[in-house]
Image (tube, rainbow, N blue to C red; front, side, top):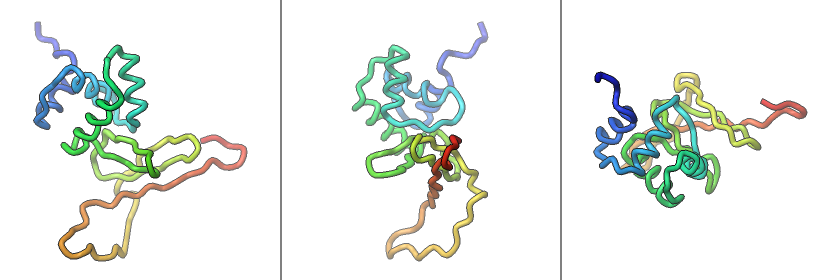
Length: 143
């Protein structure tokens, strides 16, 4: 039998990042990484996990998302106080945020040019610049 193991992509990502592939980690990684790039909140991922019969607490989802972010598997995009999305696309890029619907869309990194950044404080360096362009639907239109 020469087929690909189920969950191979998720398993490979976990192992490459040095994580022990527990059932919960593997299940969440599969939901996050087996498809296209996406933006997801912890609450959305928790709902998906429950729908996939993955028994996991919301606290475990938050902990796992934070661990994956610290390991470089995800990027956290803070759109407002207390509201974060986790992005499976870790390449250099920015975001459109549609206020009202909460939809987040990628903007290629080369499409945004930031000039005249202030110097970083002593003992620090600029690691990355994240731009969030906030959108609102025009009167009578949905995007």
